[in-house]
Image (cartoon, rainbow, N blue to C red; front, top):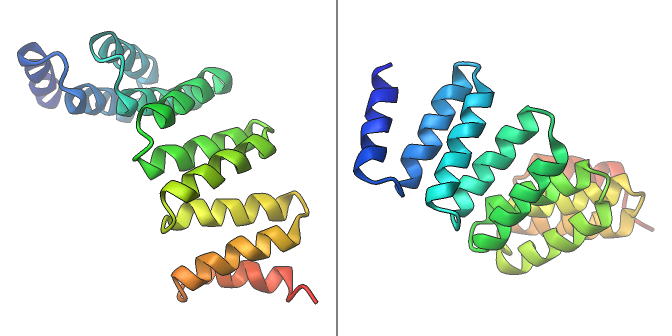
Length: 167
């Protein structure tokens, strides 16, 4: 109750303070009130419609509600509004793939990789999506890039072992 009061006070002072909207919604989510969390994030977006962070948080909340199509739209908006945020692009790519849009996911993740060449989650996602599509050469290529970036990455090493050497 005290945390909620503080977040509400912060929003009274500055209705465009994105961290207060996100943290208040997270508080509701942690209490099992995801519907209230979604309403809170939508209220925040009324005040700050151009916030990639609020769109991203709303997308995650909608996934928890099972509203994949709406969630994907929010996650896509977040990635478009904040291209500098590698995590937003990665989550959007995973959501696209989960929605059966693997080709679009690969395209989005490739663009994200160009912007964020050292982001290991993006590289691993590209490797595993290609693997799941049976595109072992492409999967191997992405896994090798990941291993080149981080030789201690056991996931990439295990993936390469399952893919074989390609000869």
